Image (cartoon, rainbow over all chains, first blue to last red):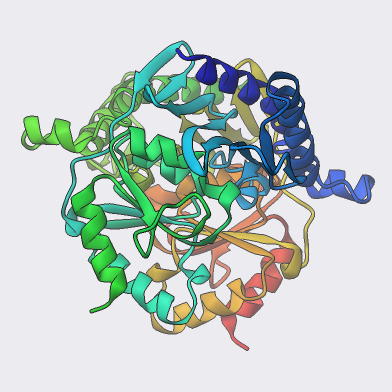
Length: 258
Length: 258
């Protein structure tokens, strides 16, 4: 276990103290009696604050980019990228498919990352030593699937409705060739891809903080993650992540046109 | 805790012994080395066998209807209805949104039911004494939400693609009026509805074993569950479940036509 991964485990625990007590607490009744009470917004902000506090204490010179509180130490070559709750729509619906994301880039390249799902107790971690799932007392190395045929592959996306115009046609063309599609999976989809349970994740208009943490997880597990155009994914945009290079190439070809 | 609910807890534990070891074991690599190995089919069959064995020992004269092994003791007024794994597509994708369903009907009316999700450790139970969630050592009574406006409500469905023709238009009309829609949630959607986290579930072409176990959960938590036509839901078909009668009526009106 590297120091980076040990530290990420601390970040996950600190964030979970803020998110978990607010998960499944957004009932209509509570909202009625506490005007303006918005558990997911509170959880988002408090989790990012908790993560930032640990980062500032440990790496005061590093850059930090978070969904809630923007960018600090912009000039640093090291940058921590935080999405305190990825999958807020799952969060407010009680579904355990959201996660806390923290990634580390060095000179713009993602080198380490975590996805923490505290309700199920799953912690997905990656750095240069590999990609891992910690669940309870168990720890396992992760490997993507060997599926190379679209017709045998499972695809995840947030929802086809996010793809507009020609992109929607391209997405529908791809989904039509897959064995199975699952929606609404957010960051959990990338964890399942790294674990070999799904084979492809396709999403559009992502922010940097949606994806940086997940890049090392996919790459260290043996997968390939790029923009639709084949470029590095750290800046977000339209992203395609696949279990292996062959499947990635086939899916990109379908997205590119008939 | 009634005897029926105690017994359902036994059923859930016996099914989990068959499902959980096979969850997330369906990797391409394993399938390659064990031709014909199909973890979800195995889990489905073995879980139903385990449940049937307990039922036959305890209630030898009761009817049993299961997804895998059909109907026995058809003449009994009491009938146990089993879906050993509801949400097989979630199961094979590694997503913890599947569940083991067991319901009890008396003279065709659902009077008790359970939904067990062993990966998260959640057990949803209902009989004439109420609807409950057991999670770890905690047990809580469940109540549906008080949301009565479609524009404030969250809707779940398996996927809009299952609705064909005029039904798809009706579904799209309804989804267009909601605050939020979530897909791919299967039986977990009904658990979230009973718990007050989502407000509406709409699905088509369900089998009896997809729904019987969930009817007491919704009704005992304060919700309303019927066919699109307003009839009893025990036989399956097109089903609409809502947090309360007002929301149910509004959603049915939108589905019925402009």
